[in-house]
Length: 217
Image 1 (cartoon, rainbow, N blue to C red):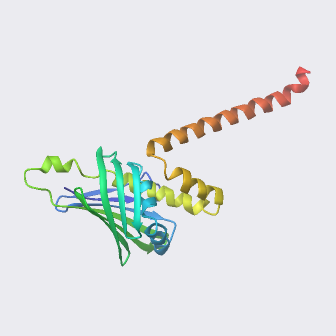
Image 2: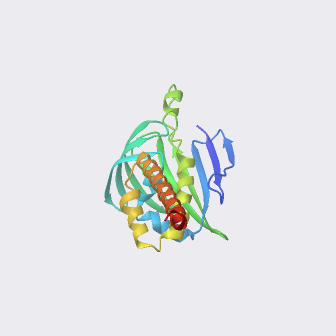
């Protein structure tokens, strides 16, 4: 197991990495345009939102028993492993910790701290010690979605900062976008891009026809 550091800077696709071989953990940090308390408030009462933002998690079923206990079933596309675990959430001084009832990963810590540009969020995955003789087998369970998760979390919060004032946008993101599986989001995005291109092409043809109409008639 390795401990990995990933700094996601202002550009979501810019990372720096540092690897240490003596820790059963991995973490990724991002900068976002909110205060630490705003980030904690946004996700502490809606843990499902945090997990559904992960582009490599297919959530089949989410059960919220109360604010501190949930159940998640689905698939982790980063290691092609099924997910079926109970989640226990507890508060910390700078955020909260999510503990898993099954699997190699023991917990994920959501930490937020204020910085001059907004807030720095850090997601830290902690793993159980690997059993002797099962090193390769259990390494296959390592969640490789941490960096994409941090990247998409940053992009989501940047968009939330820009568009959350718009009621229809909030409705779409909460009722349509979040429940979609990652593949459905990609397909929807492609359809929207194609539709937009078709509209632009139609408007260009219509504009040319309008200005040339005098010559034709």
